[in-house]
Length: 194
Image: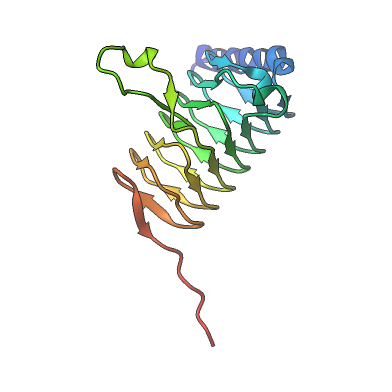
Protein backbone atom coordinates (compact mmCIF):
# COMPACT_ATOMS: atom_id res chain seq x y z
CA UNK A 1 0.00 0.00 0.00
CA UNK A 2 1.19 3.47 -0.81
CA UNK A 3 2.80 5.59 1.89
CA UNK A 4 0.44 8.39 0.82
CA UNK A 5 -2.60 6.22 1.52
CA UNK A 6 -1.26 5.37 4.98
CA UNK A 7 -0.61 9.06 5.64
CA UNK A 8 -4.12 10.00 4.43
CA UNK A 9 -5.80 7.44 6.70
CA UNK A 10 -3.70 8.44 9.70
CA UNK A 11 -4.54 12.11 9.11
CA UNK A 12 -8.26 11.34 8.97
CA UNK A 13 -8.12 9.32 12.20
CA UNK A 14 -6.30 12.14 13.98
CA UNK A 15 -8.72 14.74 12.60
CA UNK A 16 -11.79 12.74 13.71
CA UNK A 17 -10.37 12.08 17.18
CA UNK A 18 -9.48 15.76 17.69
CA UNK A 19 -12.89 16.84 16.40
CA UNK A 20 -14.63 14.43 18.79
CA UNK A 21 -12.57 15.71 21.72
CA UNK A 22 -13.27 19.34 20.83
CA UNK A 23 -17.05 19.09 20.70
CA UNK A 24 -17.54 16.35 23.33
CA UNK A 25 -18.34 18.96 26.00
CA UNK A 26 -21.39 20.17 24.09
CA UNK A 27 -23.18 16.82 24.57
CA UNK A 28 -25.30 15.76 27.55
CA UNK A 29 -22.70 12.99 27.90
CA UNK A 30 -19.91 11.80 25.61
CA UNK A 31 -18.29 8.48 26.52
CA UNK A 32 -14.63 7.54 26.49
CA UNK A 33 -13.08 6.32 23.25
CA UNK A 34 -16.10 7.39 21.18
CA UNK A 35 -15.52 8.83 17.71
CA UNK A 36 -17.68 10.98 15.46
CA UNK A 37 -16.19 11.12 11.95
CA UNK A 38 -16.24 14.42 10.10
CA UNK A 39 -18.11 15.91 8.37
CA UNK A 40 -21.20 15.60 10.59
CA UNK A 41 -24.41 17.59 11.08
CA UNK A 42 -25.38 18.01 14.73
CA UNK A 43 -28.16 19.91 16.48
CA UNK A 44 -29.32 20.08 20.08
CA UNK A 45 -26.15 18.41 21.36
CA UNK A 46 -27.10 19.04 24.99
CA UNK A 47 -29.97 16.58 24.44
CA UNK A 48 -27.71 13.84 23.01
CA UNK A 49 -26.03 11.17 25.12
CA UNK A 50 -23.29 9.01 23.59
CA UNK A 51 -21.90 6.01 25.46
CA UNK A 52 -18.31 4.79 25.47
CA UNK A 53 -16.61 3.18 22.46
CA UNK A 54 -19.31 4.42 20.06
CA UNK A 55 -18.42 4.88 16.38
CA UNK A 56 -20.43 7.32 14.23
CA UNK A 57 -19.41 7.45 10.56
CA UNK A 58 -19.06 10.53 8.39
CA UNK A 59 -21.95 12.49 6.88
CA UNK A 60 -24.39 11.54 9.64
CA UNK A 61 -27.12 13.91 10.84
CA UNK A 62 -28.00 13.62 14.53
CA UNK A 63 -30.37 16.25 15.88
CA UNK A 64 -32.69 16.90 18.78
CA UNK A 65 -35.42 19.20 17.51
CA UNK A 66 -36.61 22.01 19.78
CA UNK A 67 -37.66 20.17 22.91
CA UNK A 68 -38.13 21.18 26.54
CA UNK A 69 -37.26 17.60 27.55
CA UNK A 70 -33.66 17.97 26.29
CA UNK A 71 -32.95 20.46 29.07
CA UNK A 72 -33.69 17.81 31.72
CA UNK A 73 -32.58 14.52 30.18
CA UNK A 74 -31.13 13.25 26.92
CA UNK A 75 -33.60 12.88 24.06
CA UNK A 76 -31.27 10.82 21.86
CA UNK A 77 -29.32 8.12 23.68
CA UNK A 78 -26.72 5.97 21.90
CA UNK A 79 -25.45 3.06 24.01
CA UNK A 80 -21.95 1.73 24.58
CA UNK A 81 -20.14 -0.02 21.71
CA UNK A 82 -22.76 0.90 19.12
CA UNK A 83 -21.52 1.36 15.55
CA UNK A 84 -23.35 3.69 13.18
CA UNK A 85 -22.08 3.73 9.59
CA UNK A 86 -21.95 6.90 7.51
CA UNK A 87 -24.81 8.85 5.97
CA UNK A 88 -27.34 7.96 8.70
CA UNK A 89 -30.02 10.27 10.10
CA UNK A 90 -31.29 10.21 13.69
CA UNK A 91 -33.73 12.97 14.68
CA UNK A 92 -35.92 13.23 17.77
CA UNK A 93 -38.45 15.42 19.51
CA UNK A 94 -39.51 13.03 22.28
CA UNK A 95 -37.05 10.10 22.58
CA UNK A 96 -34.84 7.84 20.47
CA UNK A 97 -32.98 5.19 22.46
CA UNK A 98 -30.34 3.01 20.83
CA UNK A 99 -29.04 0.53 23.38
CA UNK A 100 -25.54 -0.94 23.52
CA UNK A 101 -23.89 -3.12 20.91
CA UNK A 102 -26.23 -2.10 18.07
CA UNK A 103 -24.91 -2.25 14.50
CA UNK A 104 -26.41 0.26 12.06
CA UNK A 105 -25.49 0.14 8.36
CA UNK A 106 -25.27 3.11 5.96
CA UNK A 107 -28.19 5.35 4.92
CA UNK A 108 -30.46 4.38 7.85
CA UNK A 109 -33.16 6.88 8.91
CA UNK A 110 -34.48 6.81 12.50
CA UNK A 111 -37.02 9.36 13.71
CA UNK A 112 -39.62 9.64 16.47
CA UNK A 113 -41.83 11.97 14.42
CA UNK A 114 -43.20 12.55 10.92
CA UNK A 115 -43.82 15.66 8.85
CA UNK A 116 -47.40 16.91 8.82
CA UNK A 117 -48.95 17.00 5.36
CA UNK A 118 -52.58 18.05 5.88
CA UNK A 119 -52.63 21.15 3.67
CA UNK A 120 -52.25 21.18 -0.09
CA UNK A 121 -51.55 24.94 0.04
CA UNK A 122 -48.61 24.97 2.47
CA UNK A 123 -45.22 23.42 1.68
CA UNK A 124 -44.62 20.23 3.70
CA UNK A 125 -41.53 21.73 5.36
CA UNK A 126 -43.70 24.53 6.81
CA UNK A 127 -46.49 22.32 8.21
CA UNK A 128 -44.64 21.17 11.32
CA UNK A 129 -44.39 17.68 12.71
CA UNK A 130 -46.87 15.02 13.81
CA UNK A 131 -47.07 11.41 15.06
CA UNK A 132 -44.50 11.99 17.81
CA UNK A 133 -43.80 8.66 19.52
CA UNK A 134 -40.58 7.26 21.08
CA UNK A 135 -38.33 4.81 19.21
CA UNK A 136 -36.26 2.11 20.92
CA UNK A 137 -33.63 -0.15 19.38
CA UNK A 138 -32.71 -2.83 21.89
CA UNK A 139 -29.27 -4.21 22.67
CA UNK A 140 -27.42 -6.12 19.95
CA UNK A 141 -29.82 -5.41 17.06
CA UNK A 142 -28.55 -5.16 13.49
CA UNK A 143 -30.18 -2.56 11.24
CA UNK A 144 -29.42 -3.14 7.54
CA UNK A 145 -28.53 -0.69 4.77
CA UNK A 146 -31.16 1.93 3.89
CA UNK A 147 -33.68 0.99 6.61
CA UNK A 148 -36.32 3.53 7.72
CA UNK A 149 -37.55 3.20 11.32
CA UNK A 150 -40.83 5.04 11.89
CA UNK A 151 -42.15 6.71 15.06
CA UNK A 152 -43.32 4.48 17.90
CA UNK A 153 -41.31 1.41 16.87
CA UNK A 154 -39.34 -0.88 19.19
CA UNK A 155 -36.76 -3.22 17.64
CA UNK A 156 -36.08 -6.18 19.95
CA UNK A 157 -32.79 -7.48 21.32
CA UNK A 158 -30.57 -9.15 18.71
CA UNK A 159 -33.21 -8.59 16.02
CA UNK A 160 -32.16 -8.19 12.38
CA UNK A 161 -33.80 -5.73 9.98
CA UNK A 162 -33.13 -6.46 6.29
CA UNK A 163 -31.78 -3.84 3.90
CA UNK A 164 -34.13 -1.14 2.57
CA UNK A 165 -36.98 -2.10 4.90
CA UNK A 166 -39.55 0.35 6.29
CA UNK A 167 -40.30 -0.60 9.90
CA UNK A 168 -43.72 0.65 11.02
CA UNK A 169 -44.46 -1.94 13.74
CA UNK A 170 -42.51 -3.48 16.62
CA UNK A 171 -40.09 -6.32 15.92
CA UNK A 172 -39.71 -8.88 18.76
CA UNK A 173 -36.39 -10.07 20.20
CA UNK A 174 -34.20 -12.25 17.94
CA UNK A 175 -36.55 -12.01 14.96
CA UNK A 176 -35.56 -11.25 11.37
CA UNK A 177 -37.79 -8.70 9.62
CA UNK A 178 -37.74 -7.15 6.17
CA UNK A 179 -39.78 -5.59 3.40
CA UNK A 180 -41.91 -2.52 2.77
CA UNK A 181 -43.60 -2.43 5.16
CA UNK A 182 -41.38 -4.75 7.20
CA UNK A 183 -42.87 -8.02 8.40
CA UNK A 184 -41.44 -10.87 10.44
CA UNK A 185 -39.55 -13.26 8.15
CA UNK A 186 -38.11 -15.57 10.80
CA UNK A 187 -38.78 -16.09 14.48
CA UNK A 188 -36.30 -17.58 16.94
CA UNK A 189 -36.39 -21.33 17.23
CA UNK A 190 -37.96 -22.55 20.47
CA UNK A 191 -35.78 -24.69 22.66
CA UNK A 192 -36.57 -28.38 22.47
CA UNK A 193 -38.45 -29.79 25.44
CA UNK A 194 -37.43 -33.06 27.05
